[in-house]
Image (cartoon, rainbow, N blue to C red; front, side):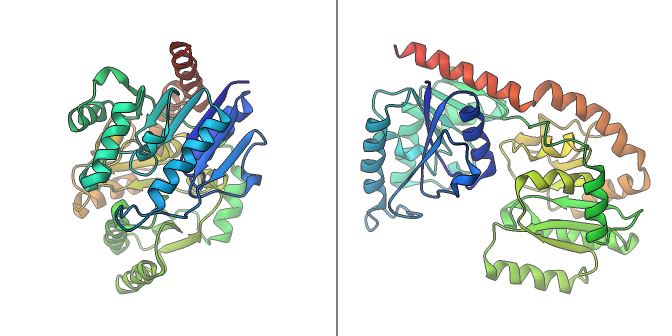
Length: 377
């Protein structure tokens, strides 16, 4: 049986998708992680190996978590002898590259924002990981040039692979569920609904989204925003709640508890527009997920979005996430021209099926695994 060992966090449903996909397709899958999940969320062919110290922060001179993790990872890999080691997120798990010996090593870039924050020994460990990797994967073509320059690695070993969307889950086939959810959330016919599916964190632009909503509500009092309470501290959520009250948006904002990823498509079906106001994004699948469910997508003109969104043809881009006026103008045009949503969906459905089909993209990933394994024989 072919074997692959991941380094990453299965608390991310995207990471779990990778694990379960390859387990379902005949691979023995192991994952070394600081954050194991309930095994019910994983296929029977997936084995978790928990690192002994939870959430080591790598203050290297005072925290012994990192060297302990290196020793543990080396022992696990030596014991299970995987055909491939695949680390997700360089800053979080790629830094464990020194523990990997004589095994094909793949490094998945989850977004180059960590480049700005890494320094000292952590920076050196990231650089070592990129150098050691036989293959580096990113979702965005432009990121290849950033990585090659920042870490002095050959562009030839950096490949672009969109992760893809599971079209059996992300689609428009949720008519009954959509009606039921609208009823529960008290969303009426004619209400324009915006959905924000990112973590509740300043990095993801939630405060800008609320300011956009305030301006919209002045002209469209029934406009609604749905977001999910996750990815934030209690103190930040209290701050955000105060902001919602200050902006007089309590009737316009719907806060849901964090839901299972398989429920997210229902929210996309309820919504008219998905908003993503990040300063930088490496190409999160949420854009394609929203497209597949028929949402208008609106994002900043960053690397991860401009390769998916043709402004005005299948979505909208804003140059600056702090340009509240421009963002409001775009959404107003969508409210006043309801045919935009259906026209964009026709284009996006074909785009996602052709370019971001999960099974097809993971088929490409498997071929990369097999090719690399062959090179090590």
